[in-house]
Image (cartoon, rainbow, N blue to C red; front, side, top):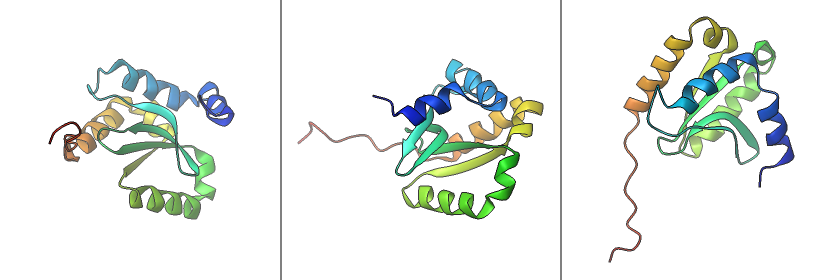
Length: 121
């Protein structure tokens, strides 16, 4: 079941978030599955690839005033084993292909997930 605030965020995405989600959802840019507006701890991240432990955050102008909070958030997410990359709305809107390429590079740099040993023994 999706929390009400996550549903609200999904229904009220910025134009940049919508554009990037279209690309990630279509799996044209990567065969790995991304999720959007995904809750982790006290946070809801914009996009996440759980298999690669990669979080993609899209920041608007309001983030210029929350730099310290964003840094604390990123530090906490990284302490949980995630890699966080950030883009500005304007980057996504003006250079979607460049953002996708940066995400692909981040995915390629991520070590593959360790296979589960469940059921073996």
